[in-house]
Length: 76
Length: 162
Image 1 (cartoon, rainbow over the protein chains, first blue to last red):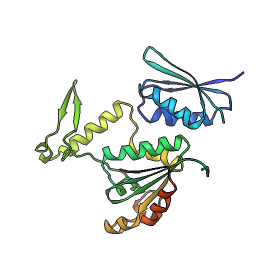
Image 2: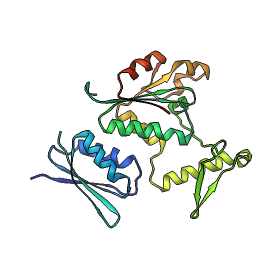
Image 3: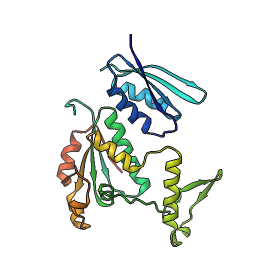
Image 4: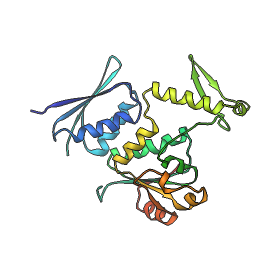
């Protein structure tokens, strides 16, 4: 069973959502999930690129009521 | 820092508030994505290495500058740039926007860059040219010249000049 940790970066602009996510991922265990809530529309493409580059898995990317929600699984 | 990681170098030549953003945004993001990042500060870019940052924007020669005001955009014709205090006004406005829109300050990004072990090199020749003292510069900076940059750049996947 993996645990999910929430990171709220609503209201923050590029590159802070990515920088804060990177830091938060370091603090969770491998195979655990970091759930990121952001309002920056540019973060959709950026989290895809971030995950491709770092190898972490973008399990889910959805938008709900103006909030972008990402589930990132730490892989290494 | 990993030996096999991708890497990026940026030559940083400008020291105004607006031009300080691209190098620090790219450096911190690159480091976040696992790249080894080197910043080489030269000429006016050295202002970004000072312990105490006091960055400003100027309206002069910046025809594309449009500040959003009450749903409109205010252009800054060059004539306006001659008014006393206009750069102070534009700087205050920019800093206000930065805060309101949740954009990181340069101080914050620079701290994050240091934390992420971004390598920062200050151009020694420019230090001498502008009579800057190492004591006025932030800690953790290397002082070197063009050869050091070239050696670094030959090993980098991305080399930028800003």
